[in-house]
Amino acid sequence: MKSSEAAPTYAEYLRGCAMTPEDIARSLDGRLRWSLHPHLGFVERDYTIAGGGVEFPGLRLPGGSDGSAVFVKVREDGARRSFVHADGVGRISTYGDSFTHGDQVNDGECWQEYLAGHLQEPIRNFGVGGASVYQTYRRMVLEESKNPSELVVFYIWGDDSTRSLLGRSMPLIRYFPQTKGVLTLSAPSIAIDLDSGAMVERDNPFPSVASLERLTDAQWIVDNYREELALQLFLYHRGRISDVDETRAVRLAELLGFRLDLSRPDAQRRAQAGRLLDQYAQRTSIFVLEKAMTWVGQGGQKLLVALFDPVRSIRQMHRQERRHDQDVVDHLLRGGFEYFDMNEVHLRDHQRYRIEFDEYMGQFFVDGAGHYNPLGNHLFAYSIKDRVVSLLRPLPAPYLDAAEMTVHFKDYLFNGKLASDGRIQDTSMESPK
Image (cartoon, rainbow, N blue to C red; front, top):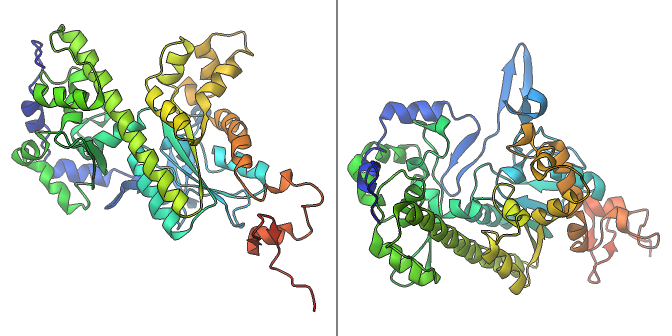
């Protein structure tokens, strides 16, 4: 694909991505929220900030509701700080991006906390802002290998699927204008081998601060990213480069069963590149979800996939159009996955209101956009709760009847084990013989 517009070629774009050592040092010095992780790419960082003679446990970030700041603390186990029944033994862990982590709300205002209060047991929050579906899978394996949960909630938001393809390319992409000239940390990623058609899992290419020095070498960038087709499609779709490797694009389209027409006008080719990238991304998510289901099943755990996309899918559904992630939804249905779709919840809930859809949605987000505010997180918690409850055995305390609710239930939460029939087995007291 070649455009006549005055955009750089892909090779020219790559050369222009080289940074100076000062750029890298400045970026790392100013990156308060995330820390580099060799295996996962990046994770939420724990911070304690002192100011005015008062020490605040956590990181103070702007962007909260009503112009407020928010406070975020990461615990020693890597989960976000929780308060509700935090001294209990949790059976639920949650993984995903910023909508799992709870960006733009305080500790205590995440949906996990509202749900924990209702269920009367703690919920671990391992969300990481900016994470991809593949990063989420890797984080799940890392944490569940150490401390397995009965139920794993695997949250997929918006463009998390596309991030699975672009993880290793993130330092070469400026997602938002305000990050121009600031290093974006890389992550592990997935790609399709165009020869075999197989999915290939790829480690984080910049696992250490020292490895970031490669980004100062324009030729190294060109040599290592010249065949990065997902990056090409991403940039071409957005008009930031003038060409895409046609041979590789055609081969990818064949593997995905996508009808690619290179004879179309430039604007249509760019739109077509975006749709091809979408289908590519959804295929990687299907691959990851299969891996997640297999991994969780081997440990006797349960998996609940949660979907939400307030930017694209929900608006396509509102217009009664095909949602861009329909392939993933179809696979969840065919594959017997347990899943929950918050898009459908909002569409049903909107029918109760006599206001426009944008006005309805805006009430649940910080400043009408961005991430959920506490009201949005509260709605999410009480919308997903029935699916969560249905997958827990024994049921959470508020759902047990009088015969099941013994005086020692609290001991189960802290010290107990499950009997073979799934009922409470109290180990805190033994009857005298």
